[in-house]
Amino acid sequence: MIAVQNDTNGSIAVYEELIREQLQMLGHDTDSEGLNETPRRVARVHMEHFNFSADPIAEAALHLKPFDAPANPSFVSVRCSFSAFCEHHLLPFFGTAQVVYLPGAKITGLSKISRVITSLCQRPQIQERITSETADVMMHLRPQGVLVDMQAEHTCMRVRGVRDACSSTRTRLAVGGFRDDADLRAQALAMLD
Ligand SMILES: [Zn+2]
Image 1 (cartoon, protein in one colour):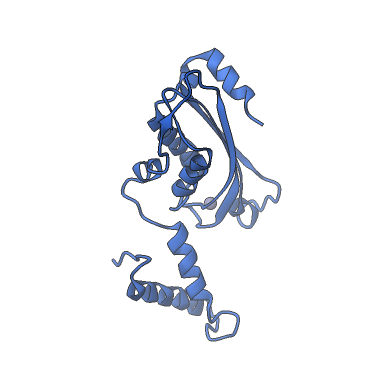
Image 2 (cartoon, rainbow, N blue to C red; image 1 turned 45 degrees about the vertical axis):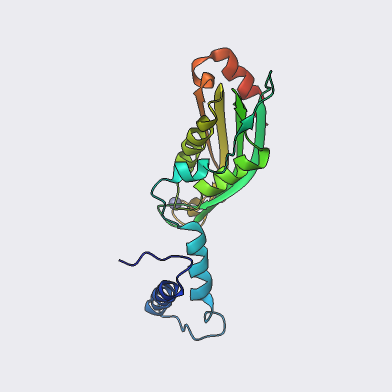
């Protein structure tokens, strides 16, 4: 099996050819004006979103770049958008994530939380796993608690199967002190938009 790397044009060409053959097997003329460049475009989408990582949590945690928290840290809430491809159908799902944490000794830059989630979305995923992995990565900061809340639209529910055009999926996970301490959890939940 050839593992396709972004930097090796040879294997990208092989991969593009597989996509071209796929379209041909479905009866399409891949020399047509519309489809001629499609294998190249699809290959690049796959390179971007279907990466293999032996340790995605550690890789995502590299984005945290922790620094010292103030003496009396406040709750922090960051809301960002995300998009990924589901591992069951390789169809996109997208939505918003809200991460609430109460720092311990360390905090991270606000934009870094968005980078963590983007990193976790670079391989075939399910929303449930992104939610728990985001919490796992945030726990690297040794915070007093973390709450992750995600809401997304899954195109695999919209364009196939039940074809429900209005469906959306919400996942939520509280870990650390937010799981164990009802008062802290209530304060964290109050931060949700
Ligand atoms: Zn799916």
